[in-house]
Length: 145
Image (cartoon, one colour):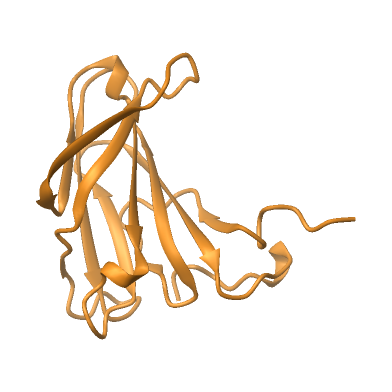
């Protein structure tokens, strides 16, 4: 039986709002965000040297993100902005869901952890990809250490 995607292609932390995610063994991370009710939200990206948040600072590399309703009824809309550490979704149902990606190579020297935080009640799921070592799900390392 072939190995499934979890552990081969990606690892995930479904409750990652404000949690430090280690990119040492991944090529990057996709943050999948959702806040129902067409109220909009602000998401802020930061980097740190370790899981304790040492040297935490904003990481102004977000130039592109995608939005949709989040229920599968519409296609993703690509949105662009000047490089920044925040993404602001509008108070519209078509922006309930937001996805942004960060390459591990975008982090400052000596930094290997990132986090995306919602200022509202949005959920944030972190999905690391391009794993350096493929493992079965039970043997994946914790993403926040």
